[in-house]
Amino acid sequence: MEINAREYLEKMRWRLARHHFVNWTTSVHTRVDLDMTLPRQFLSESGLAEGDKPVTLEHLWLCAAARVLRARPVFNVAYDGLREITPRDEIHFRVSFNLGGKLAWGIIENADKLDPQQMAEAYLKATENVQGPEHVQKSPIMRKGRLGRLLDDVLATAVDLAPQVEKRLGLGPGDDGGTFSVLNAGAFGAEDFHAVLLRPAAAMLVVLKPKFVVQPGENGPGLVERVPMSVPFNHNLMDTDAAGYFLFHMQQMLDDPEHFLMGSGEEKTS
Amino acid sequence: MRTFEISFWDRDDPSLSAMLDERVDMLAGLRVPNFAAGANLKMTAPMDELNRWRKNRKHPLGITASVAAALRWALESDGLFASLFDGRDNLLVPDNPSIGVGVDAGNAARIMVVSGEEYSDPLDLADKIEASKRDIPTITPVPFSPGSKEKASNFAKRKRWAKMVKQELQERFDYLLPPLQKRRFDTWASQRGHIQLHNLGTHGVQEFKGLLRRPWVSMLWVLEKDEIVSPGDSGEFVSSPVLPLILVYAQELIPVDRACTFLSKVVEALTDPKCLEDRR
Image (cartoon, rainbow over all chains, first blue to last red; front, side, top):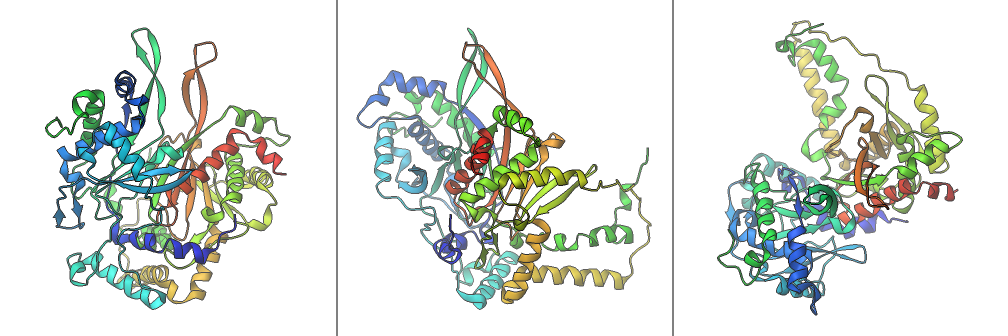
């Protein structure tokens, strides 16, 4: 494949700006392989999988993640990396799609207020207005030319040494869109994935390729479907076990979708 | 058994400083701005066919050489992964990338670099690696010395500090002087390769998370083979070997779908290695 380096860099320009080192957060990799036995059983018994817009496991875990976020709002905040946390009342998912093998991002608004059927409809609707992986909703400043880069580097070093000057210098980390990103890397075949989390996100959800593991059952060993998921989060904000609790909470909801995921679920987060 | 007191590990100790000085170019570049935003992607490749193929060849191949061939094959469909990148404006995509391979040298690994001119196709590369790895000189373990307890002179300390700062500034700001950056890229490719492959499976490593230094855009790591259990044709459970692969790549430059496609290509070549021969 012929690659035109100049064109490619121009296309990725704002994504590169978002990845400037001052925007990286310290995140811990925590992965839990979520058991999909009960949610799959729920799908087949409820008939939701056979409707006009069929509900899939992906819609169920999106619903579960949104409701866990409502119960654990710190995962949904905007964080400047130092001392300013901005709570966000609304939960807007930035969701990844695999469109013909290509990654695209779409937005699902107010994801926590959707039941699985509404989630399936919102998911389908979001695919109509997607952006490529190079898209950035709001980019940090990135000057052109060698001197522009030098100035950016000097300012970034100043921010690195004294983060409180960032606002005074009129700088900022930019934004990718949505309030919480859900990346289904498993749709592209990823079995494990350590992503680099960028400010102002406090966390994200990474879903990996489903796998079948042999487990002892009542009638001897059998196969159990598991979907590995991880939650990279900003370690400045939360303790090491936070992601474990997040994923454990998701598993609880997925094990009882009738109770936790149907309706708007305002009061059913625990 | 030799024992030592940990308190002897003093940075000012001349013998320890000498050891660090040998790696000064590495140490100076270990600042965050000199790293790429390295994401770690894992996939596994089934090994049944691979094991049969590499052992039945006229010149049998080891795992490392086989993966190197698969890596080179995948690079033909996407050369971006063997490019060198300064983090912003300078992206060099070579036509014929040099491949660096970590080879076991007894007590530690040595990096063997096969330049782009030295091989004609992926299998040629694999054969060269297989043939050359026997000639790699063994690294003799250096007996640990507890240090001299002598303190380095102030002059030696200042000299060392100046050398580190010079390296650091060069690495961070070489974009201001393009010839300097070109020289750095060229030296990097010839001494380390455009992309590196390491097989940690020989040491039994099962999990790994890597960092990525600029100007590399990606590196491939092989872990110890694993077994997956699945139902066989007649209902019984069978175990089959798989080879875990970790691709560490620059997240700022490469989207995750492109990284998955690339690593899937490596997996594809390992799943059906005959495609490497068809390529000839």
